[in-house]
Image (cartoon, rainbow, N blue to C red; front, side, top):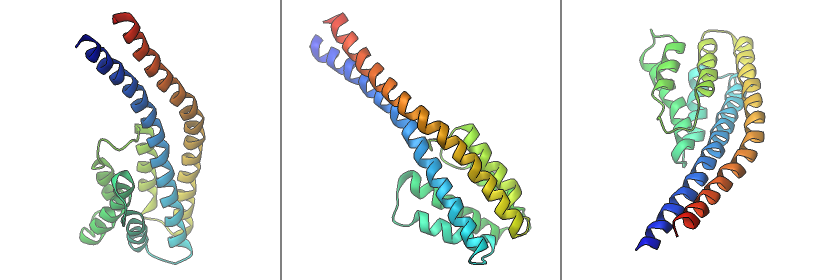
Length: 178
């Protein structure tokens, strides 16, 4: 019975290392997804001559349909913003955007700086002409690229570190208590 308990403890520590590594990978994935959505939003506004609500609906539908988890949540975020824009015409876009950002699930793998970049985008997106909207989206894309470059480098090293530490700690527990 003692050895079963030790194996369970060691497995839990190893799993914790893999879980921490997975959080970094999930953050890269969600930032890439939001970046993709912004590129598509920009193209809908500039080249399809859609209004912001139409473009949000198109992007949200495209990224929410037949997807699940955090991928669907990102698309549903756009759809919720679009719906509220139609229903609450007197309310500013930036207010709606900020409120919907605050309603994103807590388990979405985004940090405060990621959410702040999205908040900043929402503050400057909804009231201007196409050129200003394009510049706002391009600025967000530049920030996202910088974050992604940093995260990709960090993710590789931290993933190896967390997994190795998890396995080493698991082996340490087995050796120490066996």
